[in-house]
Image (cartoon, rainbow, N blue to C red; front, side, top):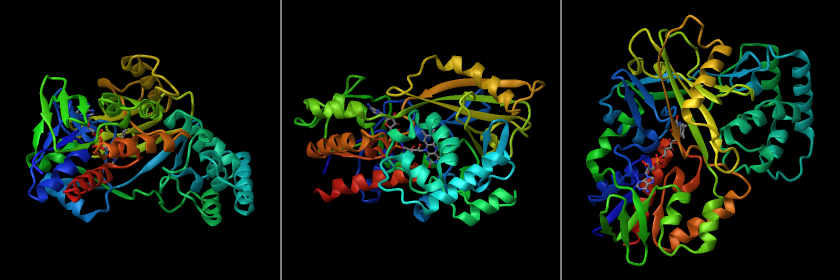
Amino acid sequence: MRNIAILGAGMAGLGAAHHLFSEKISSVVYEKHSYHGGHATSFKFENSYIFDDGPHVSFTQNERLQKLFVESVNDKYEVIHTQVNNYWKGQWIKHPAQCNLYGLPKELVVKILKDFIDAQYKDHGLINNYADWLIAAFGKTFAETYPMEYGLKYHTTTADNMNTSWLGPRLYRPNLEEVLNGALSSETPDVHYVDYFRYPSHNGFASYLDIFLKQADLKLNHELIKLDPKKRMLYFGNGTTRSYDAVISSIPLPEIVPIIDGAPDDVLAAAEKLACTTCVVVNVVIDREDISNAHWSYFYDRDIFFTRLSFPHMLSPNNVPKGTGSIQAEAYYSKKYRPLDRSPEDCIHPIIRDLKKCNLIREDDQILFTNTWVIPYANVIFDLDEAEARETVQGYLSDIGIHYCGRYGEWKYIWTDQSFLSGEMAAQSVLDER
Ligand SMILES: Cc1cc2nc3c(=O)[nH]c(=O)nc-3n(C[C@H](O)[C@H](O)[C@H](O)COP(=O)(O)OP(=O)(O)OC[C@H]3O[C@@H](n4cnc5c(N)ncnc54)[C@H](O)[C@@H]3O)c2cc1C
């Protein structure tokens, strides 16, 4: 096996390269950008302010990966007890809201409790979609007031248009005692699935990847524009070409299929059906650090422009100069359901307006820095077309010998550690073929 090409230098691509390196096999990683890391990259602005490509923290339980990441940052990392909250109609609610109803309007709490109890004893029949699942888990009133509203902002489509394959531990299902306890008292246990997380002390999340850079021949500024599976040839936008014996791809499925020479029409049509959100991030730095107690916050109201906020200065104090605080806001769009209807720069004003509305920025705060960019592929949308379309595309890739991996190759809602492991598994499947 002489020629192993890896497409994409994110967690998955570098995971694949790491596995081959561990097996003493060389590989070449091709990355379209001038930097590595993919979604796990970090940027420094004005030599002072560090922002990741959307909020990134590591909560991996995998001890081998924990060790590799620790080695990558020379033992310099923060261990932080997660604080998360929710904002709804001017109120801050401890996360998850279903276990923390205390302080919400009395009539609403009574309706939520009544529906929750009914839902526990009802036969819900077949669960056909995410909306059915939410109603069965939480009762109609809670489902419609909170997760369905948040989901519409975050996934850009309605819950009845989504499957439930992606849920995993994401939505906590409390028992009646936990719900009643949270309705009667503000003292509730923390049940978030991320109780502690780790974050590099210096240079943002991307420094977890430094250790892997020497483990492969990394070719930046190499955007794959054509792949010929018969000739086993790769063609890049910068004019270079290269043959391969095996290829591992972490390129998003809807991007790779159209550049494969001879991709059949039904596969092209399936790739078109795969939907993903696009995230506009807006970064803000102000002259004060006591902005919030939470590391990240969820926003349910439709008239609040952003869906989620995070506070990078709380992940590491070295992400900003002392005495300043940083906010990263996310607003979600999608080509299929909610096309981006403005330039990212036009998102800055409404986001600052709503940060003030939620009292996170005060009138007398000085705004020291703002910027924005678009993350074209954020979260896979698990709509009702997803499973069949994904199977068609992945079946075809397997047939023509392309080993796919990562969040947008597997087309799954997976985290950085899982993407890395997915790359390692793809590399192993190449070795198994020998
Ligand atoms: C907003 C947001 C927040 C997140 N927060 C967390 C978190 O807190 N913790 C966590 O663990 N995970 C988080 N994740 C998930 C995490 O980012 C992903 O699981 C992981 O980074 C995916 O890695 P990947 O290598 O599979 O994909 P990518 O990072 O997308 O890597 C694919 C690479 O392929 C390159 N590429 C694409 N097309 C081409 C081409 N034609 N030619 C060459 N190269 C190409 C891309 O430039 C990219 O570098 C978050 C994701 C998002 C979107």
